[in-house]
Image (tube, rainbow, N blue to C red):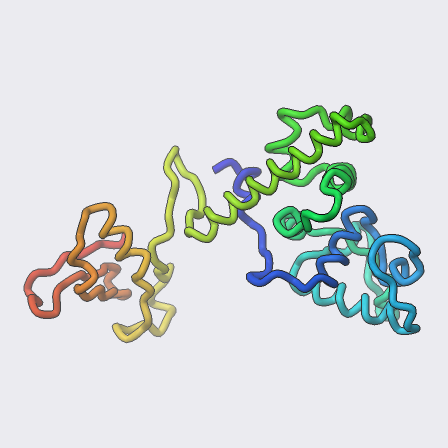
Length: 255
């Protein structure tokens, strides 16, 4: 697969949605990349403001969690120093976060404004370069953002991008991992690259669910659910057999 397309599949987002406060913080970075915990504490617009004196510390902890989840990145050029105040670290959305907010953006908030700032502040994101710019003139779209027709266009862009994100998410969850020579490669099981360096044995767990489903659908092997699937890591093969008919073995060789 083209490296730029493969990049679309290299995202990492939480399996469970973040709470509203963390999502709200991510959305503030859509419009204000480079914002810090202190900026948010001092701002009068955007996310909700708690007047407690330690509110910037609360925001710092939320940033820390998002950074750990790889949903935010430190702004390019920022170098952490030993005595830096954490509340002063400027952040922006990571590529995974852009994917995440496109999937989780609340429908009751202006999606046109959301897409406008996302395209303006994160123009080099792979999803935009591959799917938006080839069909829409970005400069015209941003220059005429106040026009009603263009605003409707922005709404359609959001619907379009969200649909693409869902499709990519479905592909990843189904274990389709990359493209080679015109074929889609689907992960069926894990196998060690170097069995000599690993303490493997017949008792080592082997996840065979996807392999069973594939063989059943590809070759109509309906009987396979009652069969034993046993890997031999040392000799690089997998045996499939009925425990009651041990002499009848199908052997899959690992190349």
